[in-house]
View 1 (cartoon, one colour):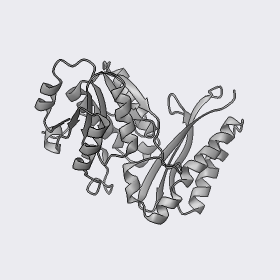
View 2 (cartoon, rainbow, N blue to C red):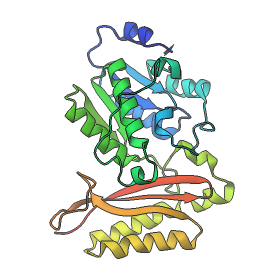
View 3 (cartoon, rainbow, N blue to C red):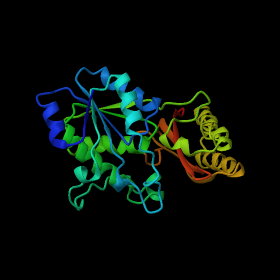
Length: 277
């Protein structure tokens, strides 16, 4: 496995490759990331993982400065998983001058975007830059960041990029908690409480699938229960799976999305569900 820090080295290493599979990350890897590497490996060519904590997607007061940087441990995991190249640029390599061109995607101000202004603009901009650097045939993203996945699929489609987007299922701990690099921020008591979010989403999804059409009441019940348990809720929202807009009356394929704070840690999760129509 090669560890590469510059764009010039990366392009030299990938010269002539036609089937590269790419997994962008911010490092501090867990088994959910490794499952994306394994998915990438099933598509033939060399597998590239990037590790870059992107300042453009962090807002004022967010955790950019304390986000864990664990490059050595990450590389050890990636080598075992069969990754071929780790691209770990520094900020000067990614942003040699002020980034005045940017991508402001649709849905950037919805859901997580409403609570994290500029976040998805930063995500879309850095991913487009990484796509131009790696020039992959396949790009792999997880469903845990459901809104991010939908936005990036739109980016690939609207910019006519020759990239196939592969979707990895949300990795979960045995108790249901969605795997996240930020789970390490949780105290022992908070970690014991954290799986409640997924349990409530799963119960709410069962209500939808059983034919309960009062979406507002379903959303409210999840939010109220989290609040009673000491969480601070950003949103609980049932949306169309294909657009993340409010579902049409005859639309079956839905996704229930949530973001809430447990102590100082912001957790997100989602669950797909289908209602009878």
